[in-house]
Image 1 (cartoon, protein in one colour):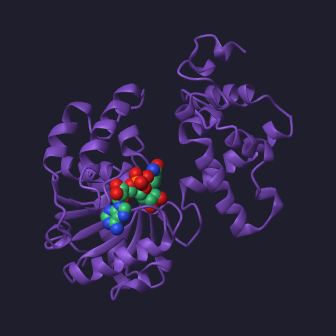
Image 2: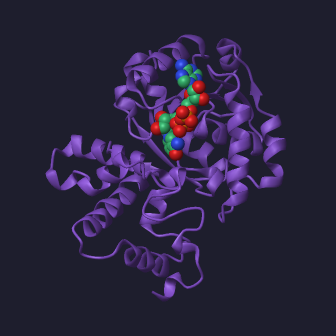
Length: 299
Ligand code: NAD
């Protein structure tokens, strides 16, 4: 029988952990949260609220409910207290394998025996973390995209010994918080949608860097096809071109196929600090990028 989840603990309340905590609280879970930086939850909560207001996407937690839900999250700097009654614990600390293994070891030592341990990692499979615990059958990847930006999809992937009931409990919980579980049946870098998005990035960067098509025309095509407010280049500017470059390098290191190496022209932009929205210049210039102008789709 699948485990009933009522209490959720979030460890690491940065960009993603804060969203996960507020989302779970909004959907009625008792949520506790911990971060080594006590100020993080309050800071990130406010930044996210501002970004949600500026975004055209509808967030999973409505903006008018954001503060109420956030007030229900019990933040504490005592890890033991945060974990003491948790049924599901989601780790969202920085993307560093050794750090995640250390955190999982502590969670395993302090959390109730029946609790499920999940990592929100974007690239590390739980199979590399589970052995830091004594409960690999209760460990899994639960990877959120950005619920605050309306992306209500969540990858779910087991490790080498994850029990079916752990996966089922995870899926049920994801559905209960207004999200769609994307079941990854066999371990793969990028999970479900990050892998799809990565294929789009690789092809579009190649077409641009080799001079086949102007990046604006690729974005126009995408916007007409998908009805999205930006194309792949606008989206890469939003993610940050340094982050995009680093992620492409992760895939390249995995495959060692030169076709997977990000183009030098992208590296040159990163070196010039043309990182996208965060430096006001990437493929487009901000705050008024060409793709937001009414005549952009006329070409
Ligand atoms: P972030 O840097 O915004 O937040 C990480 C938080 O962890 C910080 O507040 C930091 O103080 C805290 N922290 C550091 N060490 C800790 C420890 N030992 N115990 C408790 N807290 C600790 O990072 P983020 O962008 O929220 O990413 C967190 C995880 O989520 C990463 O694994 C990342 O791959 C994944 N993720 C990020 C995104 C994204 O768009 N940012 C999307 C999906 C998944």
